[in-house]
Image (spheres, helix red, strand yellow):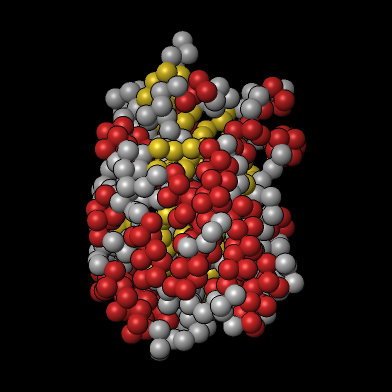
Length: 534
């Protein structure tokens, strides 16, 4: 019996309740189900001994591997955890004093394009890119001596041959069979639910009913940017959702790239409602990736779930409200006016619902004026704004022609995960800081506006337009921009500089009512902290 330890330190969000939300990992679930269906003899010979969702130090990880007597260490890497994973696994076999098999996978495994990846991470025996179910099965057959890996037949894997030479299997988009990985590998969901390490968390489940994405947005790395094929599992969602309800897994996130793209998605949405009515399962959908193009179906799903109190903070990934900016990043979507018309229709019906617009700061085509316009366009709604992070497996990350055409310049900087429960949770990202349409100074201006409108003080100021006007015309703006630029170029955090600028800006708001000035002063001096008080 080969014992597997799955390590995927995950971000915990404080967005939806008093306890942080932690996503259950479904990667072992899909792999386990695939082995059960296609290699039952191998499935009978493995045990998922532990699935670790929280960060570990190297010594803690070593202690766990000894405690569980692990034979295979599986790693899932993405931008928010890759630094930790690389650090805690370096020389880990030497520290253990024995050999174990280490398999690395996840969106940050860049081995398909970086053929030096295994040299850079010599502790890894295998690197899996893109879909991993069949790749893991091929690895298991290889180490059991049943079927050797080969460049012709082995897909989505990199390895070293007996001479230590790098080998890479071709990419293949593998459709999921019609069975249910969730139902078939229910025990792995229960294992995570029953893990006492997660007692202080609310566990949610990423619910994936399809694979792939038909679009090629330049900032996105879905399917590692290697294909635009899609597949949809069939006829399992009722049993899956019923099982989630039985387990108490009623906090859902939609893990499909484009939920609402297929007609089946509306039936899935109706099934969630039906099970809530008939069985009393208090389903809540907290994270969404709605379809970019089939907005008529998306809007129907949104309204249905709002009517039954299922959808929490409905989010629309608009990215920018200007068509030419979306064209620059190959982003298909309906015009912003259609989003706004739907939101203006829904908002009065559900006045307590926070409708969220997701934007990306720093896309090519943005200018100071256009960013101001975008922030004013979404003034009536909440927003989630991300800096454009250059993800390695995104088209912008790997296509030098695109980078040159858009004149992309980047810098590595620390990114604060402000949603995480840990105040010191930072990770490095490659951030785009200038393009053909804006300079690094313009980018600093974008960052000031983004920080300002994301602050609770927006509930204090007379209007967003007036506040942007104050910022734009502040006598201290250029000096603040210079400081931000210096911080960016040196990889330092920029938020403190912006906060100090906004604090000083209060002096330039003397034409506003005195009560507003007083509240602004109290907020910036730390005496008025909570959004509720504001």
